[in-house]
Amino acid sequence: MKKAGWFFGVFLVLTVLAALFFKAAPYNRKFEKTEFLFDTTCTVTAYGKGAEAAVEAVFERLEEIHRETDMFSENSTVARFNFAKMGETIDANEDLTKILETAVEIGKHSNGAFDVTIAPVVQLWNFSGDGRVPSKSEIEEKLELVGLDKLVFEKSGRLGKNIDGVMLDLGGAAKGYAGDEAIEVLKNHGVSGAVVDLGGNITCFGDNPATSDGKWRIGLQKPFSPTGEFDDVVEIKSGAVVTGGTYQRYFEKNGKKYHHIIDPHTGYPSHKEYSSVTIVAENGLLADCLATACFVMGKEEGSAFAEMFGAEAIYK
Image (cartoon, rainbow, N blue to C red; front, top):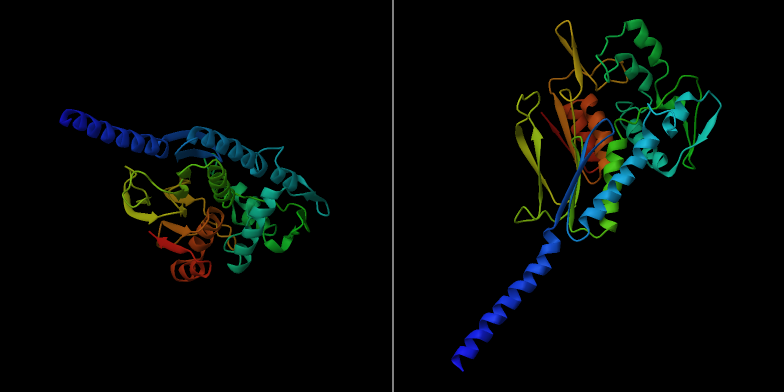
C-alpha cells in the first residue's frame, strides 16, 4: 500500500507539472521576424500561441501602410497628392486620414514646429543620399510652399492644396501609426505580449515573459556612441517610446554636421544644446509627431507641450 501510495503521489506531481508546462508553453512561445520597411530595419517579436501567424500578418499590414505613405513610390497616395496640381483633390484612404488628423493637430498646436508639408525643403538637403547644403535662396523659395495653411484637408478624406508645389512628407508620423496598427493586429491574433521596433520607434503591449513584473524595458541610446550603448532605460507595460535624434540621419560637409530634423520656420536643421528627445506616450502616432515637435520647440516648451498630450519628453 505504501508503494502504491508513493507511486500515485509521484504520478500526481508529474501530472500537475506537465499541465503547468503545457499551459505555460504557449504563453512563452516566441516568434521574431525582421524586414526592411519605411527606410529602416523593422523587427516584430511576439509571444504566445499563434505568435508566428500574428507576426506574418503584422508585416502584411506594415507593407500596406508603407505602400500608401511612401513619398518616393509613384503609386502611393502621398505621391499622388504630391504630383497633384492646385485645385485637384484626391481621396485619402483611412490610414492616411488617421495619420493626418493627428499630424495636423500636433502641427497646429505646436505653432508649426512639426509640419508634414516640409517635404520641398527636406528634398533640398537630400538626407537619403550623400547630402548637400542648399543655398539660402533655395531654402527661402521652398519655404513658400511649407505650412499647414496651404494644405486642404477634410475629415471626410478629401485632400488638396491651395498652391502648386505643396508636398507631404509623413516620415515623422507614418512609422508611429504603423506601430499602432501592428499592435492591433497582434491583439486580434490573441498573442500574450509583443514589442514592435520600427527603426527605434517602439510600441508594445501585454506581458514581457523575460521580466518578473511583465514590463518592457527599453534602452535609450547614448547619442553618437560608437558602440550603441544605452545611458537610460524606460519601463512601460504598454504604449510607445519614440526617439528623434541628430545622430540617426546626418551628413558632414566642411567639418559641420547637418541632421535631418528640420525646423519648418527656418528650413535648416534645428540646432539645440541636446542631441535627442524621447517621447513616452500611449500610442506610436502621437509619440512620433511629438518627437519632432518637441525637438524643435526646445526643452522647456517641448516638455510642457508633451505633457499637454499626456506624454513625457526625455532630452539627451
